[in-house]
Length: 113
Image (cartoon, rainbow, N blue to C red; front, side, top):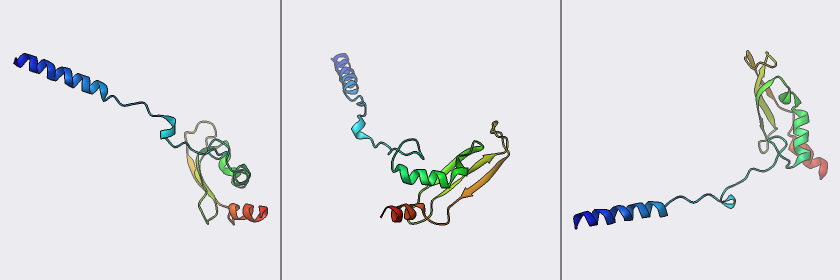
């Protein structure tokens, strides 16, 4: 009797764990990033092209890493590391920071208004 009870309990445990397998996530369950030429796709291309042209030194071949920020109500800016060893990325590195005198968003909004 005791052996039967243990067998039934184990069978129920295995059956329960098989039913409790996690389901694969569906695409509608997850947020997808917006497209952007600054980050890899196309969203507000006119404005982002202006940012890219204005901060063009941040996109040079000697830039090892960069971060472009588009803050609300402030001028855009870019910061990063430039490698003096152009292709090797083995340093020494120089830190850079770029920002326009005025917000490019404000200029683009007033230009198209």
